Image (cartoon, rainbow, N blue to C red; front, side, top):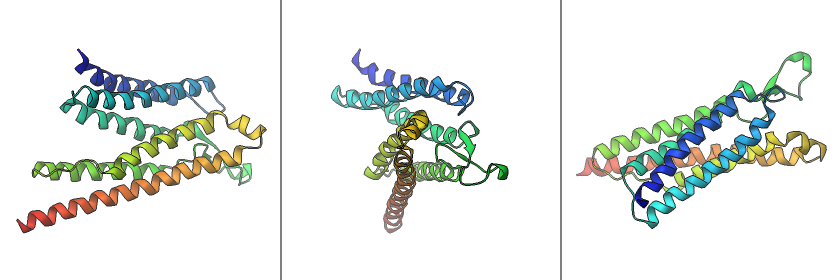
Amino acid sequence: MFRHVPNALTGLRLVLAFVFFAMLAWYQYEGRGNWLLNVALVIYIIALVTDFFDGYLARRWHVEGAFGRIVDPFVDKILVLGTFIFFAGKNFVIPDPSFPASDNVFRTITGVAPGIVVILLARELLVTSLRGAAESAGENFAAAFAGKFKMGFQSGTIMAILLYVNYHEKLREMNLEQYARWVRNFGIWGTVAITLFSGIQYIQKAVVLYRAQKMD
């Protein structure tokens, strides 16, 4: 009976991810459905909690299986990458206050630009390709610590962005918007740096495995 609980939590997180995406797709800053972001924030927190418990319970009850090893990281990537894609999209676009309104210059209130999403996607595609090539050759290509730390940092950054957008007006009224923006930007550029660093670590690991195979 217990062995199915971690997998059920993983499946629930995938469902929560698509509900979360639906809310981000309908939401529009200073447009429609401002309450949606409040609900989306709660859903995202629940998804993070299930991410912790499915792995914890699987290890505690010794029910780790192929489903969890494959689907759990897949759901994590869907949730994180999908969120960053929406953050760089049109629903979060606002006029850039550093330019005159007549110039029609825009930016995202989330601080996430399409180029950042490209970096995140490129890293995941590269690592997936390297892992597939290594494991097809019978080599172990388990996740490095930097990869796990990256996922945690990305999740924290998403939370910071959601809070920043959600309470943007209140932060401005309290003269705290600038400090909150610094926290948001630290999370975003920290995510980029950690993503690149972890990607380099996986490349180095792949090179070591390749050289070892050439020597055999």
